[in-house]
Length: 286
Ligand code: AMP
Image (tube, rainbow, N blue to C red):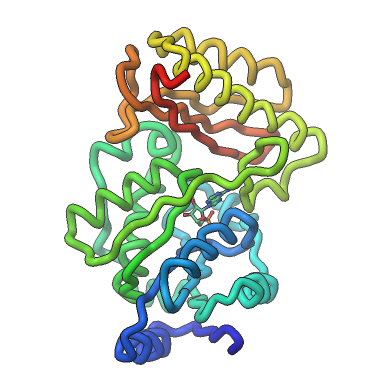
């Protein structure tokens, strides 16, 4: 059967009601479209674990802190739909902004504590926009399981917390980051990179790997580890570091002395394109 495409909340809800009535479980993959192998991995995991797979494609205005980033975000619903079809997705929910925000939104979800650092520090209002749209989508789809990538580790932590704090009856499933063969994390924004920027961007993964290697070998001084990773990035003149941090893996707070699992996380500009990546590091595992 080919994939069903709905633009309205009402139609989506009534299709999903039938799915639930026949006892099938629902897996949900929220995306902003421009689908790539990273999204593909989320979809494949959902396909394996649930009976009926829903993908949403919605470029959510409130989570963009910069107008130009929103305007330039790649959109191609037709190729997203064929991507979904080839991966046996059952339903694509692709609403217009007016469908999701028919009147000015006055209710916003703020997840405190987890959102003041890393991306939250540099993208004011971003996580408020993400948390609000994800809760709206979870309320519309009401999935048994919803799938998110570890590539956006802070986003994942925010969603896990939101679901716990607000008793949302969906399980949140984390999926490991998908990378190109040279290590660069796959992202919709990669297609904006020039050949030279794309080449230099591979330094991000190398710098994170070096930090992970040191932590696994028992290094505990976060400042020193960060300085070495920063120097590896600064050697490339097309790259500009927005942040490079070592945070604890649970609350995502900066640590100075590493005593348990941490994430090394970075946001780096390659020309006018902002890239993020992170690695989980567990001390003393080598
Ligand atoms: P986006 O369309 O960028 O909002 O991403 C939708 C979902 O795909 C989010 O849960 C992302 O974390 C996830 N995702 C994006 N890129 C990757 C990747 N390279 N590997 C795994 N998951 C990813």
